[in-house]
Image (tube, rainbow, N blue to C red; front, top):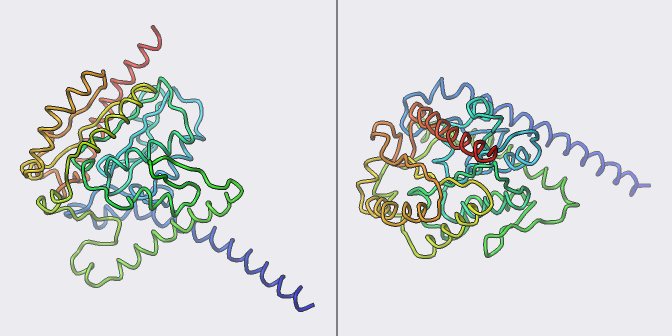
Length: 346
């Protein structure tokens, strides 16, 4: 009799915990979206270190936002094609799915597969994650970021790998391939995503309660980027044969499967003036652009388009500049969409 009673209590506790998790996750989504809608106007405007709103569906756009983007990509139907952006936080400057849908032509929509601390490893991991669930079409445009950030050191576990590991649905292999885990554990993977949403709010609240951070005026965590020192940013940079080879292999594979465009992201003049900045720009001029031209790969070069005052730190554009950049990017993508439509109608 006691055993039956204990089982009932355990079942009740499990049900209550599941209900609490769902409700807490929904509250977390509402909280982060409220922050995105109102926090910038109240506190971030004009402050150094702040850029665009950072949450979509409760997930941090450049940490684990690709989880919800993958679900959106595979479930959305009846579109001419997709723009799929792969890269780092430089790619995620001003992102709103509704706005993007309104600005891109012919029912195209943009999907953002990006991760903080971007590197060549991040690009390949996210590309492989997409391929695991989605087949690129001849109407899609895959925009791959080849920026200064792409050549940052990628030792150890990347943020993209950490997020995938937390999610639990997949694992990243030694060759950066994506392996799917037991499908029967789908409810557990959904629970993990909800826990990630709750964790985001918890971290926001903890950082907001930090007296040191409040005195510094940097606001709640995940709303700031600290790349103010160009020399410090430059220390994490290197161009190696392995990185270049892996990037080129990925671009050639994409060019064979779909329409790929390489983006050389906006670069702060102060960062450009460092020794590593000069090395990067010389590499783009002497190697990357000739490689793209040789293989018929299109590229968009935004490196010298924005002055130092348009950057909030050593790597990221300000919110106002990011809007101008996003509108320019959308304009350039629309030109590509027109060309793709023209080629398919011939």
